[in-house]
Length: 112
Image (cartoon, rainbow, N blue to C red):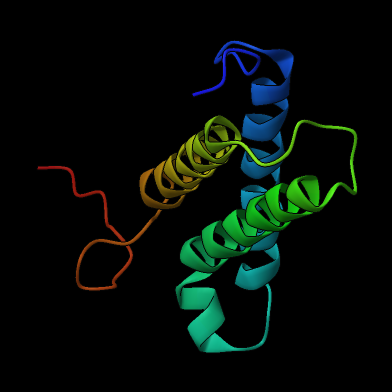
């Protein structure tokens, strides 16, 4: 690995935040579409699209479109970390605020 690309550089934070944000945005857009398949798998779709955006950025870095030293495995790892954090947040929101039980029925509070 290259010593000019430290793990704790501001660039890595940018990659994490970029992919985290894109995961949230793409998942939200997929959840609001009229296609049931995309709605059902919105978190996966958002994660995949975010990883593709990160990979496209690394590819553009390697081709010299941006002022950087080229593609970096550490940048890709930071992208993956951002997607994982975003997916985890979305899963926690989705499954902790869900008013249904496993049968799909609304939970009823019974006073026993």
